Length: 253
Length: 260
Image (cartoon, rainbow over all chains, first blue to last red; front, side, top):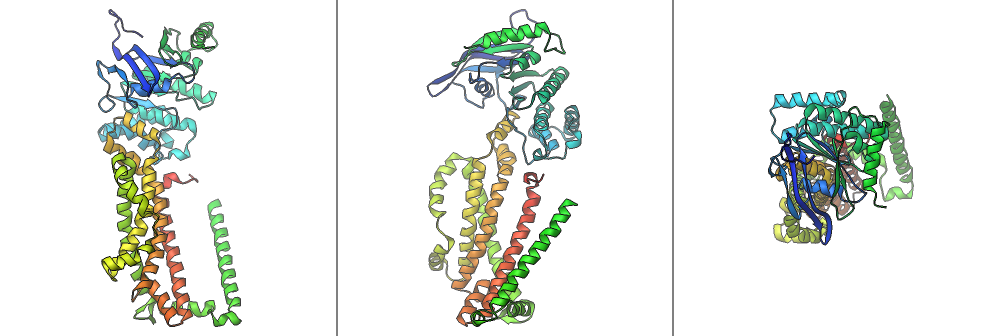
């Protein structure tokens, strides 16, 4: 993940000395790391270690106390940069239909009508919601809602996609299905993804890299490269070994 | 099919309940009580007789209804428009909230009819004073609901819009405003009832037409039939307004219906 001199891959995100305090409470303590373009980075850590704070600081939902976050070598700015965020809870707009939700980001970015229709159709098809395009969120199940969020995020063709435990509230079958869907979209689009999760198996299943955070005040404990071939088998000995390695790193007891 | 069955059952229940109500009223006013209060038949007869043809005072019943409705609608819509703008602004901007919230908190608990003497002194006995009172009745409820609606928008909606590149004004118009529509509608509905009650009070003070005047003139002339005709008209118009309102709300907020 770290971009060293001589590496071929381009650095997409640079986080330098990121520190976040809430009053006197130090939550993120001088965090520095790089994310390569096209990477799928999973961030794991103990419960309550500040994973969401970490992502919200990255995206400037929270003002950071010190440090800098660069996207393509300039300070990150959600208004100018193509960033999408999939939240833990349902963030689809209840007053918009499925297709209006998917085109919401495209409207903001003033994408021409023709191109917008094309993108909405494409991503509704990919997430399997074409026949539900006129439905309102209240008429959909939890997994369908999360798929709307995924389609909305990918439709803007983001340079950086941030996901905050997006499958945390879904049952295991749906989670597996949506994890595969994410991998398919990521492989298809080459978007850089930062995926926060507390589920170690999910991190090993999805990530190209796995970043392990410590307890508060949070720092980066270690970043592991995950070269397991795809599609990954959660029962394969290499998978189990890596999962155990991450579990060992995360242990605070 | 299920929906149709339910509607028929609902209609039968409504007919039975009205028949029982009018039956009790009819039987109750056949004896001694009939000297103090007319039965339903003379009231309905007077109602139908004066609706378009016979006059109460200088106008037919429908003209009195039109006077009251016009007063309500003018005051209601001005109050609602000001209330929506002020309420959303207070919910959206901490500065506007800091300026207007203390004043609003003082004005809100004052019932509109408490303003009657002041409105007469300030504005006089004409139409403006009545519309001012109705404005107050509408404004307070709508402002309160628009304010709390805008303040309680799910932050994830706003964060999602912000992350997709939306600026402040875009978030206000595409997230805060639509998210606040259900509470605003709840405020509009309560405001409409309050305006309807206020116009009657205002017309009772000084007026020569309107449903409030029908009742007060009936009392002055000891004409119970006229009083009951006015009350019946108030009930029917209120019911019609409420039905129209529910239809509009169902259309504009169909995304929020629980049966969806």
